[in-house]
Amino acid sequence: MNIIHKSHVPVRLAYNSFEPECEDWSLSPYRRNSPIIFLHGLTSCKETWASIPQILANELKRKAYTLDARNHGDSGWSDIFTTDDLVNDLLFFMDAVNADRAILIGHSMGGTVAIQMAIEAPERVEMIVVEEMFVSQPPEILLQVPLLYVRRAPMAVKLIPRDADDMQAVRFIMDYVNKGLPPGLSDIHNPSKVDKSTWALRRTAEGHLALKANMAVLEKSLINAKDTIKVQNGSFDGPACFIYGKQSVFNVSLDEENIRKCFPNAILIGVEGAKHTVHSDNPQQFVDAILNFLTSNMTPKNRL
Image (cartoon, rainbow, N blue to C red):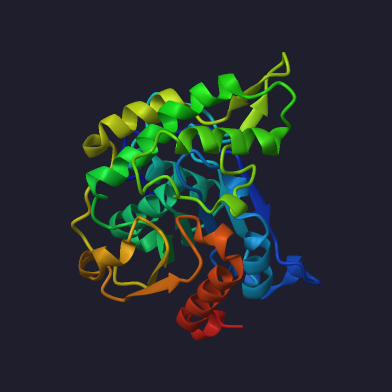
């Protein structure tokens, strides 16, 4: 196993797998192709990708996986939460499914993991797609947004009306959280695109709603962001695609100089009508952009 940090203690990772819907997949030579692994954003979960993994699996004839990061969704919880640990969790997962290399598609926090993985373990990465994330550490004002999210969401859960269904509960949490955000930053998400994966919830034995993410640990990690998020100084020469929403307050395109420094072969794609969750706000253009990028960079033997 190629483990960067030998002291790493892995956790149980929940995941979904998607095989191409075609005849004789079990006999297909495409089974030898490296898989596609989807990495979600902070407080979200593997379900955020909806039908996109299956679409890409079908189109590219590759197996796809969606993971729940530690302290998220149905994965195990840990008091330790840094990008080093998330990268090593990913390496452990790849070893477990016998994937020597992978195509990584990461949103926000997941994009940070993909970036670090590509730079620190390039031999394990075929290509990366980074959605709505900088290579350099995000500006302080933007780091305050997720911190307010993880602080206010647990308060919101306690106030959810008893008769609310899961979708109504998610919208209640979103409204409550947004009211506490600084002016101009309360529209991170497109309200019409908010779904159950925006705030992953579970029912307790008593029937109450609870957040699946370990908010206490996430808050601690965001307060100490400099210790949580490693600043990258290396480079990855492989294919890289940075997708961002043209209506997003993150303004990822402002980091283009640093992106190209670390990823000299990167392309940047801005998507109209999209904010921070491009894959939900404009899924068709998101999928089209990824398919075009991946197919144009596949080696001839793997090209469809």
